[in-house]
Image 1: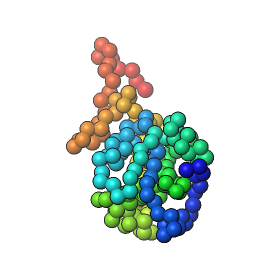
Image 2: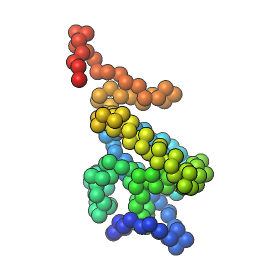
Image 3: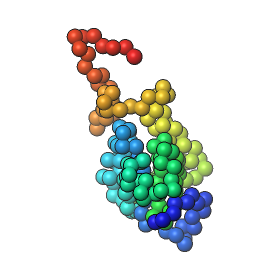
Image 4: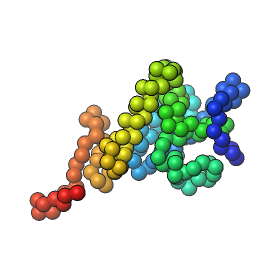
Length: 164
């Protein structure tokens, strides 16, 4: 693929999607959790999971704004289609066997509002609950399957913890 262009109507009848590349933030715990979940799902359309802003992403998609791919989920189709934000989440769900019916529901006007809300909630979580701080493993945030996200603060030397 030599050129990446955004297309409003990619003509699915003429240009079927045979593969998708999902660009994700490899430093974000939520993003890596979702990457791992996607990798385990049965796929109707193969997904390649590539760290956003990585040398591989920059080489494969030189025309993308790679700093923007770190801020919003970006998915690139095998024929150069570019999906961002809510559309990216919907097309990824569409690629998954068990999630395709949900993707069709989310692609309706009513469903799009719900999908947008989910994307905004993920961005809120990823952005540190609105305080501009991204949750990182080294800061003590851990995802425990069956429990969810928990915070294990770094140890406090001598029982005294620094305040933020």
